Length: 322
Length: 246
Ligand SMILES: Nc1ncnc2c1ncn2[C@@H]1O[C@H](COP(=O)(O)OP(=O)(O)OP(=O)(O)O)[C@@H](O)[C@H]1O
Ligand SMILES: [Mg+2]
Image 1 (cartoon, rainbow over the protein chains, first blue to last red):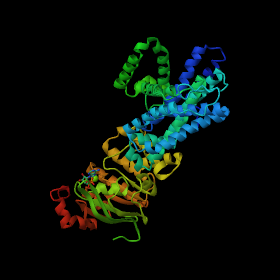
Image 2 (cartoon, protein in one colour):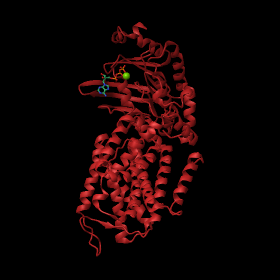
Image 3 (tube, chains in turn green, orange):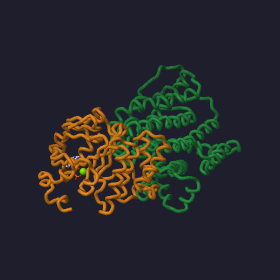
């Protein structure tokens, strides 16, 4: 399945460098930025799978992240569940939630699907604000159902987790796009009617894609909350997570494999630079997005793919999956 | 008249759009191994018949029996997997995917072949259809005539039992018609029953075993192609149209 080509060698080398950074004593600040990059990368890749390859412009990913985060928090808090069970269970909970919701959501098409999923965030936020789990002595139940998340992991271990999840998301995308499912999704994206006529079960393909993306989005959320150490409804279900996914995918290049990688890097850098100009940051982001959408709809990668140098490089590395 | 050796048996099919009845009380059968022509003036309801058989639309009433089983109400992908493939009059490619990928996907999903086997079959079919020199082009860059051949390639790659071909010859130059006739005959010789919507009389007469003519949603003639074309009612509904001129 995996041919050892220049592309994988490059990925392995970069991964090794990233893995060695904590060992050679790189600063905490840099590690923190890289940590965010890997979390954003996984989120962006999964959003690209949905919006870029499956025609599912889901705006409800923060809800699934929050569900995963809360499940993780509760399993650790109430049951002292070991992490290797708690994390998959949290992702599974988010996926099960998505599976149940897909029944009504998949009846809505296009724009309505987006609005329907967007509402999930607000519904979850309100519900988790109102909800009070069984009071446990010492539980920090204050203004909402806030929870501490104590994993006992060192920050460096959490950095490694993020690195693994980020890199895994790249490999997962390559695997899905090269699979039968990926071919089906791209066909559906290009022409739904023809896809059905070619024997593709549109509902099933989209459902698989939705569930896979939700599971992995939940995984990225778990890593983030392990790092953050606590979860509360306003932050967990905040649409600022949507900003991260949309910006990374749209700036980098939607429906391209490389787009989210470049886009996540830019979004992380912006998130570090912009707070210094806090009052202007919405303006700067707005202008940037408008420029990208107006002038290069397929994002930075779309623009680069038009240049000969970049294509030569791609050809050397390996062929991209369209 | 349906017989035991018919692969497709359609009874009293009806479909209306709003007030317009596009197909009315339409019954016919397609014999095993037969090439059946379907003619009729613009708007007669020919494409609608294909849309009903392939599950794109659900009929208001009527029965469509395929190999003895009523397939009315099945979704398009299931009907395709059962072995009924079609082409679209207005080509429906996957524009961002390559020609090869277009065909390979139909083999994988429509024919249930493995990825590798599908790629092999896609190459063979593109060779056969005459599109292999363009196999790595995005399908969106093809010209209309190539797109029509791509429709055909995508349809036959899954080894269907029934092939519904909607005006694949429209726009062909006179000299290109024999090539198409040969392709259709070869497909038929491999055991595929074919239903062919076509306006070009020469192509129809040379290809089909039997010809049905419909007008305003109804069947007005059914029989040997040369006889049907001479039928007074057929001439009447085509009067002043291309069949007389060409
Ligand atoms: N989806 C639809 N909605 C509304 N009306 C439709 C639809 N599809 C077909 N019709 C109408 O049904 C009638 C039959 O159309 P159909 O496409 O089946 O004709 P046709 O015989 O294939 O004609 P042509 O030779 O032009 O392809 C036409 O009047 C057409 O306008
Ligand atoms: Mg038509």
